[in-house]
Image (tube, rainbow, N blue to C red):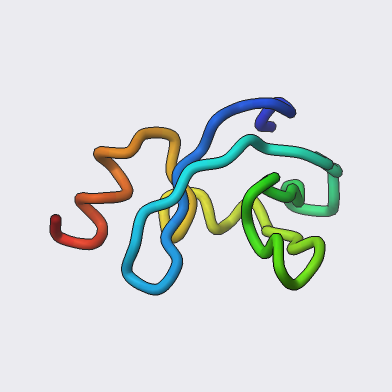
Amino acid sequence: MIEEGTVVYYLDEDLVHSGRVTDVTPVSGGFTFSIDSYGACEGPYVIASGQIGKTVFFTEKEAKDKLGL
């Protein structure tokens, strides 16, 4: 499981952004979490752990590689 405060990189509209993990919650088959800078205009956004490696990454390089940058 990921720790709160971990910096992650995420894809949004073909751009790479970064933020800190918050609100980690265990759920059946994994966990959910939020990113402090994700969806700031729309309120909290809950992300499933299955998105790690797809839209959320531990390094900026991984995120850029996913976009082909």
